[in-house]
Structure formats: structure tokens, C-alpha cells
Length: 531
Image (cartoon, rainbow, N blue to C red; front, side):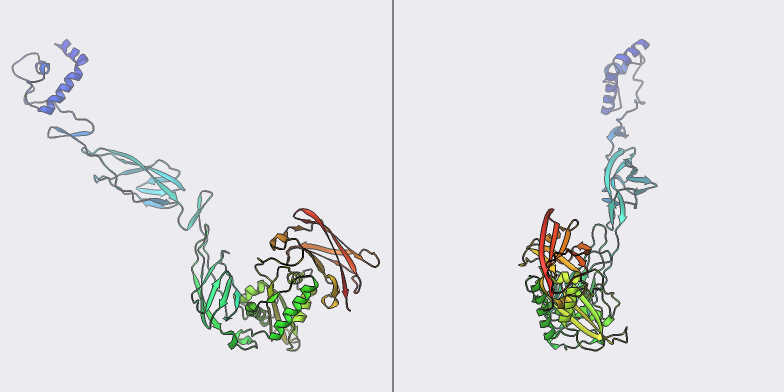
């Protein structure tokens, strides 16, 4: 009998097991069906399994309940509460399956994120992959799953070299504006502490408007402007600011300045006419087209002159703590030619005298600079406005009065010019001696493009030579202090020669000027005469 059992075990065991399981599924009583399995005891009376049934074996995915194998419940994960992680932040982990069982977490990307003591920490920017496990119970299947969560920078950060860097904070300093006049236009710009451009908008369009860098007075009342800066990839948005100031009807304002109330006054019609005529006279000497008067910018120039006169200073960049400072006056200073002088009497400083000084530029605050002349002789200049303010002097008792003057020279220059191609030289042809002062720097600009102002920058004087010859004697003049840069046209070369005589014709030859990379030569003559 022992040998038979071994044979069954070796050859028929699968059938025996199946039969046993099948028997259990039908019921645990009696062994009438099943053939050989009921007679394997070798003899005796009755069935020895009666009252002592064989144990039931269920599959791993099942459990036994009241003698029946039942399928274990499948676990599903509840929604994960985190869609993005912020680098450097930690998050508590608490998640249950739909069977109410706690899930265990571990990180499959330990360089991106880590899990410790029920806390998830975002280490670096990237994809954090988490392993989710739940061991299950007697009646619930285990769970093994994974999920990916992005680790990003915070909204106030930006990614640089795979590291989250805090964005810079910025502020807007409210502009200082004393007043504006109706029918006037003012250059106005602003930037934040981060040097980003500030958006300006009018909240009172009935009294003032703002567009494309220009503030315009519409009607008397109060003008309110709002300033915003939205930030950029590396800078936070700034807190918005607003200012309010008066808009005065121009016709209601007096002509005389009121320094105590920081009112610039109004320019006389005589000065306006004299300025325009004198400037056009000078431009005509150089073959340049006439310009028109920019009435709308006059008060801007007046407020610029007010800053100069009130503070007895000469600067294109006045400080905000100066007397009668205004941002429109300060912007005007950056876009104008300026002059300041002290006087022993209150006589007005005439525009003709100012223009003369600007042309020879011998009195320039910066030695060797002829920028005032070059801007005046800009072929693309189409209009200009003048400002002049007389104020008591507080710095020098010998000169009880100070006069500040300004005239607008910087515009967008998006217009063509009718000026002929070639040189814009000082002095040029027959030149009145009143516009020349002994020792004045001579200058040459080259107009190469009549349509595009900035195209005239493609002029290179690095290898240029200048030869000045006295026509009557053929003597070559000694040239010194050669210098070249981009101002006004925007190109020029300047030089001196020590023995310039009046009423003598000089021929000038400018050679090896590279225009768009090609060598060019220019010639002209001049005669400074006092006839």
C-alpha cells in the first residue's frame, strides 16, 4: 500500500488535488464521489474523514470565510493632493486607499525628492517619482503603484543653472510734477528701482492724457497718473503708485516767473521769434533745412530752465532734492541743450546771444566737447522749443541774477531729411565771424543717409586724415587734438589748428573715411570773415 501511495503522489497528484478542491467546493460531507480517494485508507468500516474534513486551501487572492474561498478586495488610491512641488519646501504625506488603509511612500528619484518620517521634501527641480505601497490585509489585496509630481520653482523665483533663485524686488518712486499747462506736451518717462520701464496711464483723461512717452494737458483741473511695473522673468511686480497735480489753463497764467511757487512763467513772443530766426540763420549757413517752432514743448523747456536758474546749476541730470524740481523738467534737461549764466543785472539773456555761444561751443562746461553745435546742426532736426528763466542768485553776491536756458534737440528722428548728402562742417564756406571764437574746435559730420538717422552711424574715422591748406599760400596747417565720436548726425570728427586767420580761405580735405566699410573722401572750404 505504501508503494501505491508513492505512485499516486508521483503520477496522479494533480488529479487528486483537483478532486479534493472540487470536493470542497461541492461540500465537506461524505466521500461517495471521488473514486479512489475514498478508499485510500486500505480497509476498515465507513469513511475515516467523516466529522473531520480535510482543510480547504484558497488562492493568494482569496480568503476563507465559513468554508468558502472569497476574492480579496482590490485597493484603489484616493486622489493625490499635490499637483506641483516647490523646490525647498516640505509636504506632509497622508494618503489612504478606498479601503481606509494608510499608504506608505518612498522616492524612486532621491536626487529630486526624498521621503522621511511621513514628510515629502522637494530637493531639486525635475520630476519626482514616488512609490506607493499598501501591504493589504487578510481580506484586502496589497497595493503597489507609482506616481510622478513635478518639482518647480515658486512663483516668486526663477530657474538659473538648475537652481531656484528669488526674484528681485522692485519699487516705483512716484514722479514729482508741480503742474502742467493746457495745450502743452511734456516728455515723461519713468523706471523702477530695477531699471525696468514703468507703464504710465492717465486716470483723468478729461484733464490730461498720456501716450508714447508724452503727457498732454487737456483742460484745467487735476491730473492723476498711475504707474505700474509688472516685473519680468527675474523681477517681481512692483506695487503700483499714483500722483495728482494741477493742470492750469495756459492763458490764465502770468508771463513772469514765480520762483517761490516754482512757476516758470511764459516765454515772450519776442524771444520765441528771435530763437527760431537765429537758429534757422545758423542752419542755413551749413546748407541745412529750416525748422519750425514746437509750441507744445515750450513749457517743458521753461520748467527745465526753471530748475537751472533756481538752483544755479548746469546739469542734464538734476537731483530730485533740488529746488523746483519736476520730472518733466528733468526729462527736458536730458533732451535739450542747456546753458546757465550769472548776471549783474536783471536784463534778459537774448536767444540770439545763446545761439551764438552754442554754435562756437567755446564756453562748453566740458572742455573739448562740441555737442551743442552738433545737435543744432543735426540734418534730421525738424522743430525745437526754447526756454529761458531769470531768477535771483544765491551763490555769488557779485552776480545777483542767474539765467537758465534750454532748447529741445532730442526727438525720435523717424523722419527723413532734405539736407544734401555730404559734409556738415564748422565753419563752412563764407562764415560770419560772430559765430566763431578764437580757438574754437572745428568739426565735420558726414550725412550718408537721408532717410534713416541711425544709418549715419556707419561712419568710421579711425584711419581718417584731415589736411587743411591755406589757399593763397598753399601752406599746410598744423592739425591737433583730433577726436571722433557719434553725436548729433550721429557721427563727427573734430580738430584744432592754431593759426586760423579771419578773411582767409582754407581748403579742407578729409580722406580715408570708411562709410559702410568703403573708403570715402570729402572736400570743402571755409572763410571766417568779419565783413
